[in-house]
Amino acid sequence: MKSARLSFARVHLAWTATQWQKVVFTNESTICCKWDSNKRSWRGLHIWNDPVYIRQLKASGCTCINVLAVVTYDGLGPLIRSDESITPEQYVDILNRTLIPYFLDGPFPDRGFFLQHDFSPTYTSDEVLECIEANRVHELKWPPKSEDLNPILSIWSSMKQRICRHRLDEPCPDKLWEVVKKHWDLMTKHKNIVAKLYSSIPNRLRDAVAREGGALVHGFT
Image 1 (cartoon, rainbow, N blue to C red):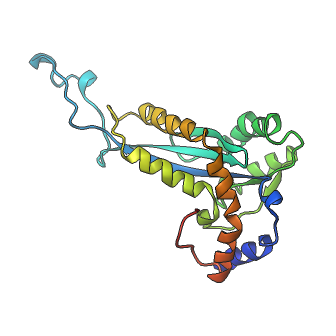
Image 2 (tube, rainbow, N blue to C red):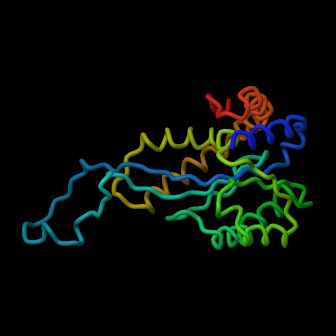
Image 3 (cartoon, one colour):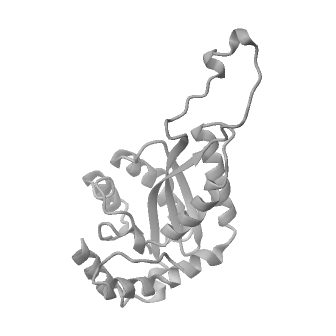
């Protein structure tokens, strides 16, 4: 793993700011939030244990959803919800229906972009590779275990800190999605955040080389 990270960092140290601006970063993450267990409701004794009035909750007291995020140099892109980890078939559908049309109709009408995604079974599957080739998409080969090199990591960190301070009225994935989408939409207004993260990529690569491919200590700044 460290050798792959080191090789990637050394090769891409020579990339210019313009080249990095053509990279589309993606990342799938699990977002959880606790619900407000102190919220009370009143009902008659004869219906106190009716299933309609009983909230189903995980033992952890948390509600979780999976989210795929997309970022380009122009700013935050689509945010896609999945209640489970995304499968290869689902990702192919996301590429065809959402991401590729978004890129071509928006920041990259000339297809002049590189698509980054994690080195995991879903994103390296034959189905996904065939879809990428069929759509003439250039892929940025990403080393395994390298979320710390992805600028989205900093965006997730900021979002999760805000969401952790938010208490859900009820333990419902749909409610959590509303909160996540609200914070994402608010962050889309601050385009300078993304530009700053892109400009810090060369420093992160230099840090990875200095650590001989080891994990980075600090997040994107």
